Length: 155
Image 1: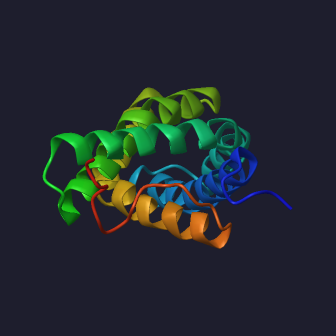
Image 2: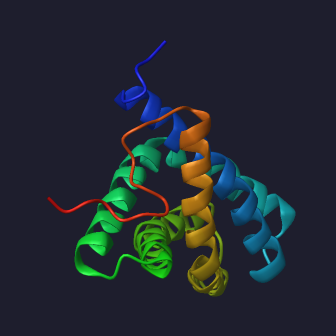
């Protein structure tokens, strides 16, 4: 239907990945770590869906740029990719998450706890999301993304 290098296919893969991943990880953090009620968490997760639909492809592009920067300026090793995924996830998602929580009316202490917990959890979540995103891109047969295990050639 769409070429494997099409922007629409790439946007669909990135959107699917972010909506699914953020729904489940966000709910776990909100309920288990931040003390939000199930109703507050469901409200937050439902509000997050259209937000994630809007930001998914720009975030995918941002993440790819951070990874490229890591490959250009760091050693071509496994941990460079993981660190770039972590930094991209935390720096892009934390402000968005704070706005979503403010919109659903959580108290300030819950907001601070949720965003701080999310930032700490993102040390794992961001890396795992990078692998999940690459998996979803393969499912959607998206080509032209960054190499997962090897450094780009320098010519």
